[in-house]
Length: 126
Image 1: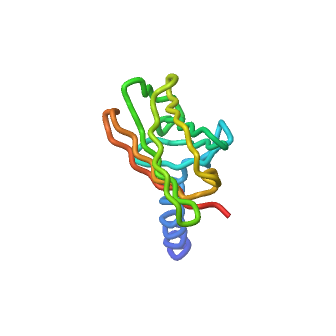
Image 2: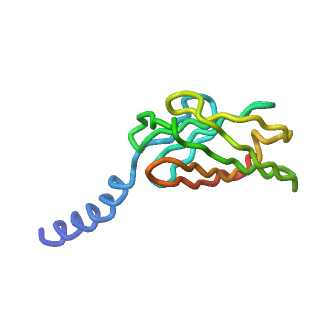
Image 3: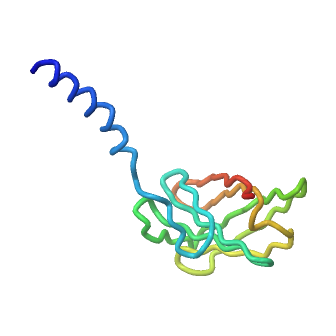
């Protein structure tokens, strides 16, 4: 009986951290790539000539970005492009991109002008 109790505690101890860390899947609402950084969630949506960055909090609620700006550095096939993003809507920053393949390239994102600076990286996609 005592042995079963110890086993139960061990199993509970192993499973507890998983339930605490589990926060759901990062599901993009706009078809982009998601990353979580510094307590915020960022969705980067890249088309042939435009970059949109949606900012939400840890609970997926929109974060006001009226006074914020952002920078995205794309790395594609050894080429680099830095894109400045400006606030467009409540939680949307947007800018123009010219580098072909930036929708699949690695990206380094920096958001300034919020209570806390946000920095994030997205790996290249195959």
